[in-house]
Structures are given as C-alpha cells and as structure tokens.
Image (cartoon, rainbow, N blue to C red; front, side):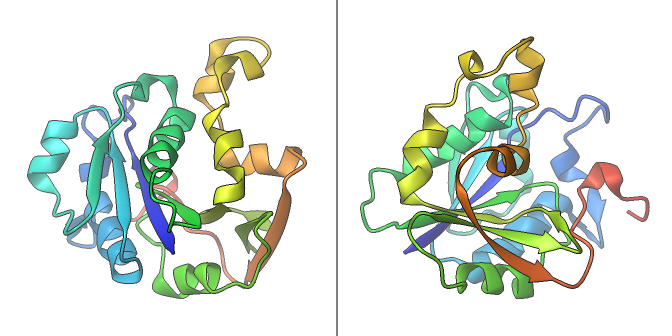
Length: 197
C-alpha cells in the first residue's frame, strides 16, 4: 500500500498570514492540494505546524490523518520525519508519496504516473519536468529510516542549511537510486513563484 504525506507546517513569515490559506482558483491552496491527493490515495497524512488550529478550522481534510509537528521551526525535514514516523507502525504501507502543501497545480495525471511507475524497493521515484526534478516524490519504506535519522549534525555550517533542507537536492547528491519519471511540461510551482493567483 502507498500512502501520501502532505507537508504543510511552515510559517509563511514573508506573507503575514498562513500561505496555505492563500486563494487559488476559488479555493485555498492547501484545500486544492488535499482535494487532489485524497482523490488518489486511500490513506493520507497531513503534517501541520504553525497556525495548525487556524488551518484545521478552515480546511476540509476528509478522512486524512492530521498530525502536528511541534518542531516545525526546524524546517521541512522535521515534517518529513514526523510523517514517516507516523506511518512506520503500519507494516502494510510499502511507500510514502510526499507532496508540498503549497503546490496547488499538482494533477491526478502526475500522481497516477508516479504511483503506478514500476520500480524496485530500493529506488525513489521522482518526477522530472523538462529536465528539472520536483514533487511528488515516492519513497519506499527501505529509505524511511535514513530520512528519519537526518539531523542538524549531518549538515556543516549554520543551522539554516538544515532548516532549508531540500529533499530533491538531498536525493540528487546522495547515493540513493532514483527512478525518474519524465513529464513534458513545467513543474508545478509553489505559491511564492506564482504571479497569477
């Protein structure tokens, strides 16, 4: 079984309000992501952190499991760790597909192609959009421990490197085998990169 993890714990400090609640085509961006992901997965985890009470009041999570990352200020890796830790007790779950909560343009076409891609248990499935890797990323259980054990000590220099951890960059520079799924269009951008909503 393949579960989904939606990462939506950040503080959106530059915006002054939770980015997850910004409007996108008549809905909030997080609601748009949740709607699309829950259509494609029986089991979905949504990781919240900053302003979690506000988000739980305004978003319909359907039958998703909402978990609160109390360490959200540590950055995205703490949310990945929280989601994987929550899933690890269910031995039926063979892989987790990780989504960003601020990429509302993700489509069922992409999701289905990723989750139906034939791959080995020691391969992470990553979409490539016109030569650029992105999300969603399917991570087999084989790698969960490796990601759960990443700490600030693994990074040289300031803790901002750890806080700004980027899963795509980590996968590209590690010895993890990647199974690339090609798409002939630009990757879904996050809210900060959009100019039309």
